[in-house]
Structure formats: structure tokens, C-alpha cells
Amino acid sequence: MNLALSLQRVALCDPRRPALFEGERQVRDYGELADRVARLAAAFRQHGLAPGERIAIFMRNHPAYLELLYGAWWAGLAVVPMNAKLHPREAQWILDHAQASWAFVTPDIGAGLTAPGRVIDATGPGYEALFAAAPCEMVARAGEDLAWLFYTSGTTGRPKGVMLSHRNLMTMGLTYFVDVDPVEPRDAILYAGPMSHGAGLYAIPHVMAGARHVVPASGAFDPAEIFGLAAGVGRLCLFAAPTIVNRLVGHAQATGADCGGFKTIVYGGAPMYTADVERAIEVMGPRFVQIYGQGESPMVITALARSHLLDAAHPRHAQRLASVGVAQTPVEVRVTDTEGRPLPVGEIGEVLVRGDTVMTGYWRDEAATAAAIRNGWLFTGDMGALDADGFLTLKDRSKDVLISGGSNIYPREVEEVLLLAPGVAEVAVVGAPDPEWGEVVVAFVVPQAGHAPPEPAALDAVCLDHIGRFKRPKRYVFVDALPKNNYGKVLKAALRERLSAHSQ
Image (cartoon, rainbow, N blue to C red; front, top):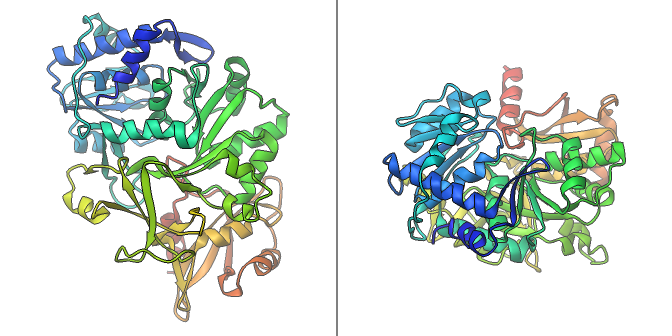
């Protein structure tokens, strides 16, 4: 069950099919891509890399990324992609922890990285020299064999290495066609987000379908460039965090840019607030699908289909819009108490998932694996509730729930309401210690550009119109920006630390 088999299959039956683009310029067809991948695999083997060994990738998005992923799999190796926004010391720690033999870098970020074997600039002659090897046969792999070692974003403590097998990722790829979006060869997947993360994972279904793969010439996210590619390449699909979606929508609003070149925008990786979803559909049209997953069950827990997003006539449309959809086809999802006992419809508990996309465990961390996977179920750490139709609504990470006066308060619920207030661009809610109530609600508010901070009384009024009085923030802190990690998730631990420092 080698993931590289899908590339080989497309290359054999249709070698001249366009495969890899840098901007609007075609770099490889599928025959050329498969040939280079087989030569790269041969070079790995000639240099003594054995099946099961790992290669690290610390690169900005680049056409070589796809060659490295599939070249490693063709040779029976596993990949350790690292986010290009990491500090070099963070990347070095991951490389060492993963026990990677080789590393591939782009010189703008990876010049100081060290590895036991070689560190190769994927933009230089040393990389091209590897393709002098004659193509080799693909190495057979079992479904359970490690394919991708994904390091969590590490919002608290050191990141953990999530072991994703060929079966995990094969299942993820096939599920895309059923629950997210059918793919045709004329479609194009755009790598606007880090290829070390969800954007790169979605290479797998698009290779399966023989679609086009587009790396922006800038190697980064630029709304104007992406709209230009949508017009020039056409039928553009991409995975984007909500912050990226909001920037695309903002660009379309500000410039009046034509959205017709976009086919599908899959969003996930962080909460997408209802007001933002409604604005995105209004501005860019019916192009959106939401997925909910984790590194531990990559891209596959639930999905909110295009049809659900557009079914405004449904009596529970507003609730569905605020949800993350229903369980994807190959997994079971349940909401449980702390002991893993299923809870009734509508009750809030921890979200659990079981199925063939759930990781095999954490790299070199048996204790963490045992804590996360119990009786086959992955305990996600996310809190949510299922409705009678099977739609899952997330509340917060279990560690983010705050208790005030004995009542649980879920920050996302308060955040959704505050985003309805005029002049609010972003908001994050956390708990602050309080001698009387245990915790009180504090809202960090980013005002809209060009607006003065809203009056606290006006924010209070919006809250009191929509949620119980006990959930209303006791304090508003106005900030220019919210602290976020490399994947766009708000670092609530940093906000709590700020409150703690100010109280001393």
C-alpha cells in the first residue's frame, strides 16, 4: 500500500497529462514527475537510506516539495515536513527528535540546519545531481508503515510527532472524493498554505485524480497573486485556514476581483465564525466546504458540505452553519464524558473519533499515545455537542473551557456573539482567576481597521441580546492583533499569561 502507486498509475496511463506548475508555468507532466521521483528514490537507496528511515523537509512551498514527498515514499522512506515559519532552533529540535537521516531545505530558512547524513538545498545543483541515478523499482510498503511524521504545532510544551501510516493517508485521500469534493484532471490544487500541513496533505487526493498542482511563484500567500492564478489557471482548489479565507474575501471585496476561477475552497484548522462564513459565501459564491480534523486524524473527522452551507431553507440552517458538519465516511464520531461514556444528544463533552485515519501513535512517546488512544478511540481534547441529525458543533479545547461561579462557559460561544458587534475585527475570550467567581470572562478585542475601539457598554449590549448574563465578559482588552501560532491558531495560553503578568 505505497502512496506512490497512485502517481505511478497516472504516469503510466497518461504521461503527458499536466502535473506540476510554478505559477502559470508548467514545470512537469505526470510522466516527467514520476521519472524524477523514481530517480530520486534510486539516489536515496544508493546513498544507503533504508526503508523506514526519515527525511526532513524544511522548505518554503516549492515545486521540489512534491518530488520529495513522492520520492521518499517510492524509496520506502517516511517524510518529516516542518513548517517554514518555525524558528531554526525549533526545526532542528524536530529533526533531531525524528531521528531524520537527511534534510532538504530552501536556503532562505534552512541554511543552518544539521543532519546526520546530508543537508541539501532543494534549489541548488546538489539537489539536481541526485536525478542522475537511473530510476528504481518502487519499494513495497505495508499499510501500517510510517509515511508522514507530523509534528503538532506545540502551543504548550514541545510538539509531539504524530505517526501517520500509508493506510491513514490513503484513506484520507479517498475520503476527499466522497465527503469534500470530487476531483477531475482539469482541476488544480493550489498550495497557498504550508505544504508541511493540510495543503500538502491534499496533494494526495489530487495526485490520485491526476489533477494539476500549482505552487505560487512567490512561494507564499499573496491574495492578488492567488486571484491572478485563479484567472490564469482556472478551476483552482485550495485548503486554507480561516484567516486566509478572510483575507481572500477581503481582497475580493476591496478590489471587485472576479471569483470565477475558483472551484473549491476548503477551510479548517481553526474556528470559522458564522459571520465570516456568511460573508465569504456572499462575496465569493458557493465555493466553500468545511472540514474538521487534527494531525492525529488528518483532515478527517467531520465535514460540512457545500450543500449544507447553501441550504438556507433548512429550519436549522443557522445551527448547521455554526457546526463543523457530520462524520466523514470512514470514521465514527461520538461525544463523551471524561470516562469515554457517550452523552445524550445536545450535551457537551469531549469529541472522540475512531477509524482508519487515526494515527498509529506518537513517535517515541508511548505514554502520550496511551493517553490519547483508548480502546481504539482518539480523545481529541476538543469539546463539542452532537445534534439529532449528527451535526457536530465545537465549543473549545477542553483546556480552554472556563468555569465561573460553578458554570461552564465556552469561549467560542461568546466570541461568536462579540463578532456581531460593529467595529470588531477579531476576538479571543479567556478566563482570568477571580477570588469570588473562580474565573471571570475576559475578551481580547481587535478593532476593525480605521475604527476606534467599540465602547464596552455597546459590546455588553450585544452580549445581553444573545447570551446569558453570566457569560458576558467582565473585562474587555483592546489589542492591535492576537498572538497566533504558525498555523493561524490563536495562542490563548499567551493571552492568559498576559493577564497573569498584569495582575502581579
